[in-house]
Length: 201
Image 1 (cartoon, rainbow, N blue to C red):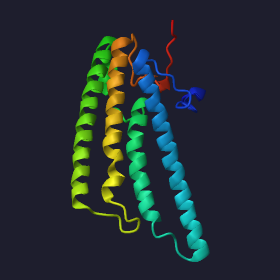
Image 2 (cartoon, rainbow, N blue to C red; image 1 turned 90 degrees about the vertical axis):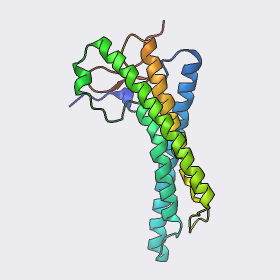
Image 3 (cartoon, rainbow, N blue to C red; image 1 turned 30 degrees about the vertical axis):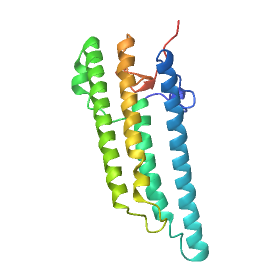
Image 4 (spheres, one colour; image 1 turned 45 degrees about the vertical axis):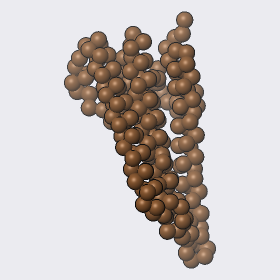
């Protein structure tokens, strides 16, 4: 079992991008955006679920709109969490071949992986937007809340786009650094994934 790393306890609030200049500012703003979105989504889901349970216990039936709110929040958290997972190197990786390569080859492969993944994310974002346009044209609504269904999928293209930007920044980070990075703030160290902060001169 690996040793406890205190740096991972709050790796979002203390996040400091290693990217230079404007790219670093963009990276840090995206990190703050992701943190607020995820925290808000989880908190609202907890409040909604607890309130519904209390309502069932006290009044004998829950809120008729509670299920739809949780459905909206699950979609919201899922796509808002895509970028967070990419930023902190938390996505599942198949790395048997990658780990067998020398450092320079791993760097080249990581840049390639990051760029291809970014392209795929932007591609999915484009098609997710097209899907929303289709839903909008059909005019379907949620029966309990009465809002149009396309609104609850707005976070799909946004989440894919933010994740694409994160992988693009990861490629740039690897091109401008001597070490190999899984994301802009997580260095590949052959062991447990750890948040790494470079020493700035």
